[in-house]
Length: 275
Ligand SMILES: [Zn+2]
Image (tube, rainbow, N blue to C red; front, top):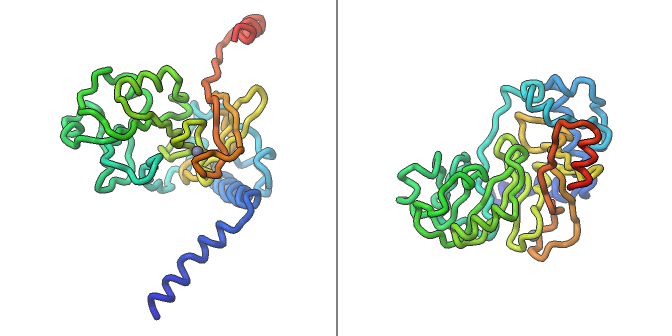
């Protein structure tokens, strides 16, 4: 009897949440983050706390955010460790470099490639930040991998370039998967085995494409950073057609870093024409 009560009472909130139509889910997420931002941060005090659409919220300039992160941060909010999202099935023995995730029997965290413990762990897959992989030697000290390389990218690191992808594939001889992280290390978008764009994790991020494919992101799953509509300095497109992998969430495709230079308007036009 006790068992029945537990099984009946647990799934219900989950089912209620899941049964909301996507538009309603999006509004609920916006309301939740907007409430946290207005109550706990300096930047959002002028916002309309009753806004119903992301488009009603002013955008935040990336440079302004980077210069004054304290205005956007909720200092005493707890952050929780995420599990590593492995792109296909269960994670094999995976070494995660320079990112804290919730460790499991097969997923272990290491501070860097030079840690003597990484080769001893004999990883079958490797997960590391883009900058660390770019700086690592092309003849890896760890033994051959069997499964995958996961590359952590983000707003500051920029997206994975085709050259990076080729280089890491030649170095490790296994498929390369990109995962785009937020400022708290939370997963915002991930590449599936089809390798055509990054699936947005809709409970963690809301991406919008704007003029000239400029990407804006709202962070929905980081309690320390209830930041809405940040200009990412990246360009890209959102596609919503069905992915053969079966995951329904929209994908970010053709993500690139937007080159920003302080030049005269004539120089800007020349740069735009050249690009
Ligand atoms: Zn897919």
